[in-house]
Image (tube, rainbow, N blue to C red; front, side, top):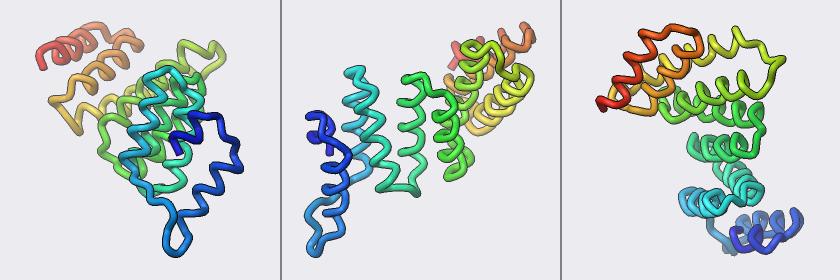
Length: 173
């Protein structure tokens, strides 16, 4: 799949390869971790559209994995599609409610919406940042990303002392 996407193959070619996995005997086997790794190769090369394409196929092949939704959400967020990224992070969270990386990403995507969309419902987004960052810290008190998201949520609410305490915790860890 990586090679096809890398060469710019169309949707039809990708569909044919995906369908061949059901042949008897199977023509292709897919490993979630391998597809995710290849998607991040595109991502690190700043080939976000290709990363999204591969991550979408990984979601299709492994819909019960929280990780495939989290990866797709990260690529969509980098592409600027915050609404779609949030939907992917929420699906990831449905599959694993204590997933700290997803909670942090949801908090940060809410913050990104505040900055990017002047028409956004700031109060609702701040409430979401508060909720997600609190859950992240509660799930992993030793995670610096959780504390960093917490600090950001508090800062945006002008709760300076609490924001600084959370930031201190980030650096202490």
